[in-house]
Length: 389
Length: 175
Image 1 (cartoon, each protein chain N blue to C red):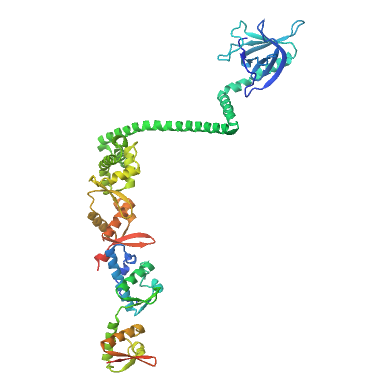
Image 2 (spheres, rainbow over the protein chains, first blue to last red):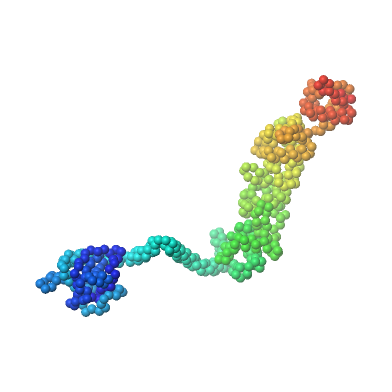
């Protein structure tokens, strides 16, 4: 009898009624109980017993714990009974009317007949084990249960309903966002390790310099070496405003002096931006901050300066870059090839096209070149107007 | 025309792009002015129609596949005007007279020819001078009437000739 639980008489979502009989008494083993006159209901999952007088008094027994079923046919003085042999009580079941029982079976006494039909259905249901389908997918049950509770407020009419649905949506969005950023946080934690790792690789490669011959390895090495500023100047460490820009300008100058020299004394601001931010790793610079820092370079008399060409292209230029030299070199280059477009010059000097064009325009401005503008593009010639009579 | 001695610039592609550099442009326009005047002189033309000129060999080097744009042609013509070698015929600047020899120079040439022919103190009609059989082969043969009149006027100012107009026939008497 201790296998029974109190319940409210409602069914589970998957549960359905199979059969019911009135005038049934429940016996705990051989003993009579208080549940002596009520309706017994057989569902796909349980046996429910409802008191005839007190409709709120309902007890239930899961079919899963029924081990065997016996029939006691009616006699002259006794009504027909069904004996249910029960297994051990399910752990964690809801409280029932009896906590302890000496018997491992109960009897249902059918005073108003119909026990045979009930028995037939009961055996069938035990055989079919529909409750297992349900218990096999508890998450589905949980989801559908939460869904029904989730749907209920939404179906509420009026402003409260709308507000609740909005609240619910916000809650879900917040959950999604925090989940998404959880990944990002992990990445950021990992990134510091990655930078450290790349540094160690870089130093390792540096030590073994002699052994590296392949182009790709050299390239890889240069990438690694150009990575990582040990203590990037940030707003946190160097405050805001001028002081920040000044420190940043100094750092940029030390970082970029070598690369700028390598690529011919000039680097467009866009390239600078990419390079610097790759080197900084996590402490990224905004374009505005970078530009402001570059502007303060001249004032600080650093070896590299910001220069803006007439075309609006901004570059960082090595201070030792001589305009005269550029003009002479470019003129010589054009003379050697007869005429050049900016694309061609870019190829010869391994510069970006923008910078090559700036060189040509500068040289033209100084009178070293003259232009031939056609639908095919802009081509530069040696300035024969001035040199040839 | 085929034997016109084109300057080296005519075979230089940048010649057909107006140069942005001021110094270079100055040299370039100089070259253009002398080319236009030299060419006009070679073909003995005094007038220039801008629309026609666009596709003439003067402004269009077919071998090089380069042509001076209309805009650029006007820049060249304006430069000629500034130098006093050009006069616009209309307000729309569609046609112009190119003065590759000044009226006084023309007058001098004509007077020299009259003197060599010993036609001093004789009266000639303007038609005789520019289109007559006698003047064939002379530089001023086929000279634009307007320019001829101006040349004679300059001679008149010098006292070497007198411009006459009788019954609609214009004539000139050389002294």
